[in-house]
Image 1 (spheres, rainbow, N blue to C red):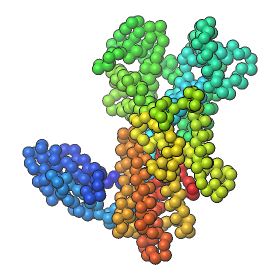
Image 2: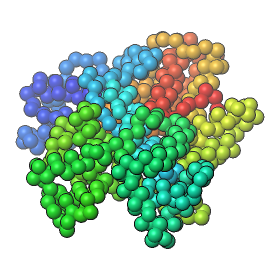
Image 3: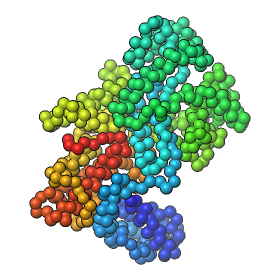
Image 4: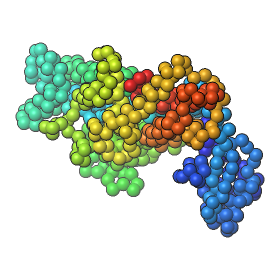
Length: 566
């Protein structure tokens, strides 16, 4: 159900009926209850276009509205605002129709698109750290959302598995000698030790560069050691993804190295199309409007991220058939993607009907607004942060005695991981993210725990009732009932806009409003009290059921689990 679409259709019909060439029609949710449920504010620009009084334009539109069941009344306010009040009976019938539908009335695309979502992208031979958290959480939520709405989603984990660092690591492993593979248990410490040798010993650094050449040349021993690093790193990543309830698998990995053979072809193709120029020995493409060119091949013959990204775009469009490619990468890479996308268009790798987008996000900061680090100033390992989240959640659960040890651990993990994910997804992704344990594990405000508590509270109603809700006529006589019913019907339009703009926080804002409205409904509209008439009880049980189902569905899209009791 997309209410705005239905209202816009009515307004468009009214404009046609009254001979008004309206162009695009936009209806918005009302900002205050006294302004109705929705508003059409297009009379002012139409009046300017037609040279008429805006209130007269609004009157012509209102008088020409076709008969319908959706609107209870329509008012003209101020200079020509059209306030739209929905019929409680119509809202009730729509709630009845979708309350027990597994998809809650949300449709799927009639023409699914193939969408590539590129996210997480850790570097191999190092452990995942907090710098990978936002890409992983936001990317997975976006992939879930697009898939739910009917797109064919291809998840791509563009891991960094090539380059000088691997020559350095292989050289250090060889230097340690037989049995050194055991030192790979802590990849982060191994990397630090290798990097220290690389920075301090020129002979070792030279040897490391030689190993890069060997690796690129297909040396069997080097490739074996390289694969060992990749396998151990991916095993660690899978542990993180499992804890985060993220749906990335090894099948989703499309590493940098997989494009290696295509890089010379990219250079040759750009050259053949007259796009390459030479600048200080390097082969570059000058992008209109950009101060510096995009370097495609260095003067020493080496390739850069831009070359690999162009190869990836060409592969994803020509081989995978992608119509939308979403790169969930931090905002500091905005200039890089702007140029890569421009060159991909210039070279014909991505036609205009393919949407290329940089789903950027801000930095992760501590409560003092500084980059999130350990107390010693080091990088925070992601696995340790998630374990800390579970530990803090276990401490925050007040009714510990109500659970057995295994159940308590399961609940603590769901609450803790949910808190970390929701805190990230509840802010505009383009903003910097202030990491605050106290806020994310609070029962107050727009937090995961608030949503999980609202869901568990609704489930407790059905346990007390002794049975689940059954289909029944919905009655919306009380204002809290009506407002809750209307909010339930807004799910699809929220999901659609969140998918279009790649903004998961639209969903969390909706969930907070929904949970808050349910709490007000629950306080003012008793459900199980003995003096409640049976027809009202059955109606309110349907509303409670629909609210719980909506909370569960939307949280699952965000990758967050719910709890039957909390």
